[in-house]
Length: 574
Image (cartoon, rainbow, N blue to C red; front, top):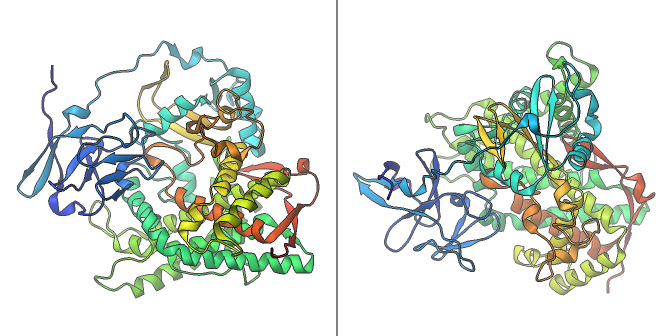
């Protein structure tokens, strides 16, 4: 029996883009409208692969291309190019200049059933009042939870000061949580207030309608077409990094790899998102970078504290963070004021900050100063630490594998010849060996191995009933170190990402997340990693100082390598 029609207004016709997909929301569902020769077609709004928002994709002629893993769908039929999947279409009608859709075909009436409660799950024995809090070492929180996953299995139960948590390390269950955001799960309830207190109330910590509006702007700023126009600037920053390394090599100096790579990512991020070139690679000391370096450790301390002591007593480390946030706020206030003064009516925004200043929220009002500041901080932090740390781990791993360095150099030279770095985005995207090294580094040494969520209502995960308010921790590394998913999983083997058929299950690696809230900066981060790895190994030999075992994982919201120092030697031109 066919479901009863469920017609609802989705958008005014004037709101639909003529040359790209338009993300729509109706009846609590995500939709995408795509232009066709016969008018707009409306489909389910999430990719059947990993749930990415199709409204964030692009049109390639008459084909809708998902931004996540580049799945392609015929705009007229919804059929996937190269696979059996087909998007579910919604019947549409035009009434009084508006597009109405029938959602009946998208309603899923199947309900998951549970056979277990979280109390039935295995897990470490809690102590009175504090639960398992004292059994966790905040400096290696990821390691503690990974140990529990190995001991108790892919789903386990623990408590922190009266709150119940379910640890999940099975990829299918992690993806189920990520795909069910933002309707069923949100970030842990501690995230938003802690981020707000530190001035980072932006798209990362936002929830609900506020998230959707802010994400749309972030995705546009980081779109493929914007990156294509931005690439010459990225290449210029890469050349500065090469010059910095050449100077260090000529002097025989020790290079702090994390510092160098962070300067590179700061220069790229500020130029792309603010139109402001800080040039930290050339100017020596950088106060902004030093202030930003204090933020993630503060997140880690506060998110994992048993008691929110900083709301009552400011320790010296908290006062240092307060001063850093105040300096960043002052710097960003001047930047926002300067940018606002340059805006001209009718001129399209040229960067993320201009787009934020020009946009309006759901009530038609400009974004508040707090939201502007929070999103600027989010862009700085997300664009700086994670990419720099992933690159540092890649170099650390390559130091143990000279044959991989040779393979990377051979392919780089085949693509760009004797050039010091890729001259354009097309060449950069052909560096499949650099991409493979990046993927393998993110697999073995993930910089974001944990994600904390909370159930917004009673739900079921796998066969376990998850009550409203329960915390769910996605523990991502155990699966990708399992030989069930990756052949010889403990081995650094970039070729596994190139070989056909690939000897691994790529879907288990969710370095940038999955689902509707997949990282907006994924494409930029991968381009940066390709370019930096090509630039480094094309021109330099790299010697890590000390043994591999001296480099430790340090958890501070993200996981960075400690004590990673290198010496560079210029390579003779061939």
